[in-house]
Image (cartoon, rainbow over all chains, first blue to last red; front, side, top):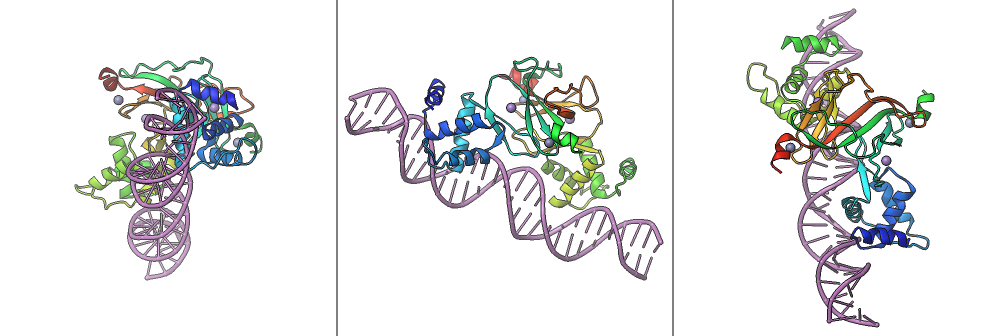
Length: 144
Length: 144
DNA sequence: CTCATAGTTAGACCGAGTCAAGTGTGGGGG
DNA sequence: CCCCCACACTTGACTCGGTCTAACTATGAG
Ligand SMILES: [Mn+2]
Ligand SMILES: [Mn+2]
Ligand SMILES: [Zn+2]
Ligand SMILES: [Zn+2]
């Protein structure tokens, strides 16, 4: 727990129960919606690391604060609400199953952004290449 | 106009004024929101190719019909409503300006989907690699 | 002409996220 | 050690983009 506190302080954020609970939830399960984070945080309400429920606005505030300081990252795949994960600093990509929606990490062969070279189109200066592989996950591909 | 009719018929869709107006609007300006398509269609109301206004539901029906038969494609960039364009069949990608939101086409060097090789992660079978380059357009980059 | 099918409309509804304004509290200064 | 206030959090209304439903209307094959 107090390593989370340290992490937050390092980035200039106060260490609050809610922020720790959100970080903890994201560490357990990546690519979750805001609602799923909320449930996880609510569940933390029982047990030792007790935490009072977090309001919707509070949750979005926490997620945005964590994103701003680089601890959290989100993706917004077409047709899905935003999915949140801990920012690993590895600039990885995602593979999303068209039939069950499962999201998988895809390590980036380059590692640093922008990992694909910008096509030199009309002076555009890219800082990131976001790649989503659409298809079928192993399970859905076989059960077809 | 009647080339649009031919196009629709080819794909097994009836040629209606609204469908032609939507195709025409998208031919004029790519990467537009549903609302922008609606305005364009409404504007077509005056002039020779007169068309009665299209309801919201009607618009989404038309867009979905056109998408289903492969005439229209849409992207849903993070933080933006869906953007529609004519499906050129070239599997191109997009560069989006973080500051003004301008969207540019980026020709795909491969051309056919999936243009990037599938990450061999856990049996995932990709059929498309969607790439978005985030950064600054020429104008916004210089005016920084 | 006739009626099945395709297209269209109006309006309620929904999920995800934001805004604004007030209340509570972590943690450094006294 | 305690006080204070900037920062954290709550509440409730609201927006936006899109979907659902249940009519209603136009089209065209037979
Ligand atoms: Mn990930
Ligand atoms: Mn395009
Ligand atoms: Zn799947
Ligand atoms: Zn720009």
